[in-house]
Length: 216
Length: 216
Figure 1: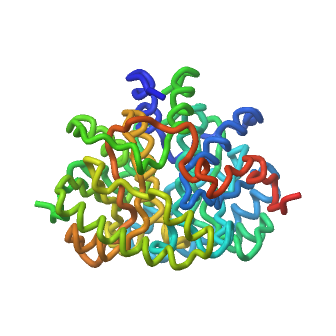
Figure 2: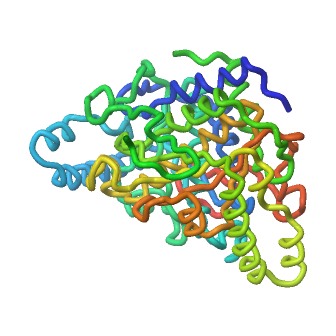
């Protein structure tokens, strides 16, 4: 199947305009057909040994969102103590999640026991199953952006909070808690770049030829 | 920035037609402008705390490829011993890499020390930096597919083989070794599904609402 240059450009437009959204969620709900399309895209991620280790838990219940928000507030307060001086004040000033504002939460998991203990392609690199579920997150993120839905990945919350709130069994790994919804706007640059937290690295500094090379 | 329905469909076409390519590589080289576009797309992956922990090592040297192929053969032989009976024979019959046929190798890494020891968003979930580099792999994969380039992720090789071959420092984590090139064709279904290794799960079996639910 051939991808045309116009289709290629649409993929690049989606990749370059994808943002980690925390502040711009609108309350309008996401239609089921849209939700099903992005979940199907996530389900078509690559997976090691075709084990498809992911599950997706869709969260709309506000009580559940409140429990996860409380977990965020706790983990965020713990994190703030790790920064010092101006950096701490800056950290505390940033809006880092939209758990309660976003109409949808989606938890992405990894069942490392799926398809048995020996998995083709995982034998020399045991973390490959976790990485497969992360690929599903990125497919989901790009599909959401292609639907003009914003998405944010909330990582400042301990796994046990999500596990308890969503009744996830102990043998299932939690990969990501994602917030999704339509947005007021997509910013041209990432929030943390705009806030002066860290700059965008030049791409060429990340590219090496034939061997690892130290930066000039 | 608005994504049109035609652009959205191009993203889905790319996601659904992406394959893990091992057998169909053609020898023709990949133009530098194409390579630079897909690396720029990878560099625009999401990253925890905007740390951009990834590096990309582009491999064309055939001696390097041979060393990685030798590492694959060793890890593949070790893995075969973990399967039994018919499953072992089936495993041994599968073509699982195109290291020497593909004109390009790309190693994706993660520098967990980048931007310091305290990283925004990594404090409660330490693996977030590794996951950021995996998101870069998936961006790269979809960008490659959008350029009609096949890509395969070779995970059946021990990290130390890649580290030695590419002179990667000890403090850098190896995330993926990828093979890229133009292809004879993209198959309609994944190799492992076609070979009867495992079936595609129905998407609905992976989707839960509000709470984890066991399959019917």
